[in-house]
Image (cartoon, rainbow, N blue to C red; front, top):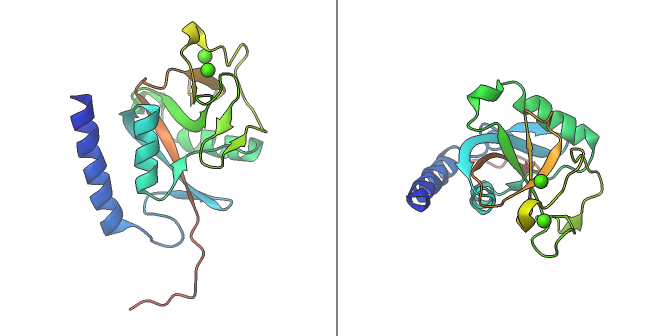
Amino acid sequence: MAAVSMYEIFCVLLVLTVTTQVSGDCPSGFLVHANSCYMDFNIQATWAEASMICDVYGGYLAEIGDEHEQHFIAGYISRKTKSSYKPGIFWLGASDLLTEGEWMWSNSDTYLTYKNFAPGEPNNAAGGEHCLEFDFSGNFQWNDNNCENLYNFVCEVPMKISTGGIIG
Ligand SMILES: [Ca+2]
Ligand SMILES: [Ca+2]
């Protein structure tokens, strides 16, 4: 059932992307910061499903490279109340799926430089936490969690570089 509903969501997103993408430098609905576009998705998905949906938009699960990006994304999500998300937890684009304890950003294939883990995290609880999330309740500090959990997520899409506006 979960797989079917995710597939349906995937198809809807695909249609939306084809019909509404690219107004200005970011896909429709995305907010620009530095050289990237961001959007919070109030959809419950596994880490892998969330990654797939971001890929539809030509992006990836958000990768936080410094405190400015951390504060921007936290502020962006905080424009809504926690109760408007189900749940108020969001996947980010890092995991230690390849090697336990070695955290890497998946899209850029680099080790984390800036980190904002909550105290005591990552703790690989029950030996089964390999994906990165943050949430309202923890002041958007990071935690490792089970990749199969169903959370919201934030996609990051590289900002399009204008090539001179040859249209029509
Ligand atoms: Ca782990
Ligand atoms: Ca944890």
